[in-house]
Image (tube, rainbow, N blue to C red; front, side):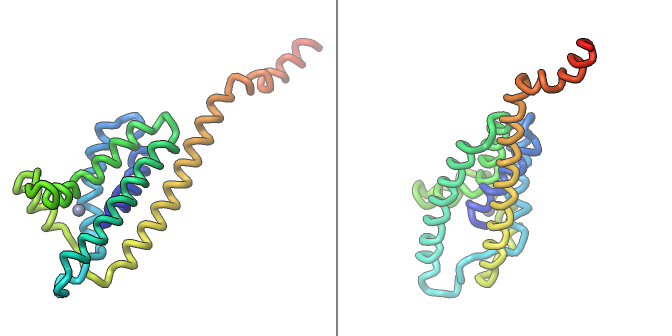
Length: 176
Ligand SMILES: [Zn+2]
C-alpha cells in the first residue's frame, strides 16, 4: 500500500483518539497491517526492470507521503494535532524498512515483525485502482474531518462572545 494512503488513514485515527496520542500511535501501526491485507498494487515482479520500477514508484510515493504528512500537521486543528501526528507516524512505521534497506542495507525490525508484515500482503499489479479509490476516499474523509475540527476550534474560540446572545432573553426578562 502506498505510504501516502497510510498517512491519509492516520487523520481519522488521530481525530477519533484525539485525547490519546499513544493509543492513536498503536492503532496507526495496526491500521498499517489491516491496509496491507486489503488487495493493493505492487509492481509486476515478472518484469526484468521490476526493482527499478518499484524504486521509481516508491520515491514518488515517499515524497508525496512526506508532503501530505507535513500539510496535515499544519492544517489539522490544535486539539487533535498531537494524536494525528502520532497516528500518522504509527501508520507509516512498518514501511520504514524500505528506505532503511535501500540506504543503510539493514532492516531495523525484528524477524517476527518482518514476517508478519510480508505475510499480510495482498498485492497484485492489477490493483492500482484500489489504491486510487482508497486514496481519494480517505483524502475526502480527511478533508471533511479537518474542516470539521477547524470549525469546532474556531467555534469554541468564539464561545465567550456568544455568551451575551444566550443571556439576552434572561436580560430582557429581568428588565421587564
Ligand atoms: Zn506495508
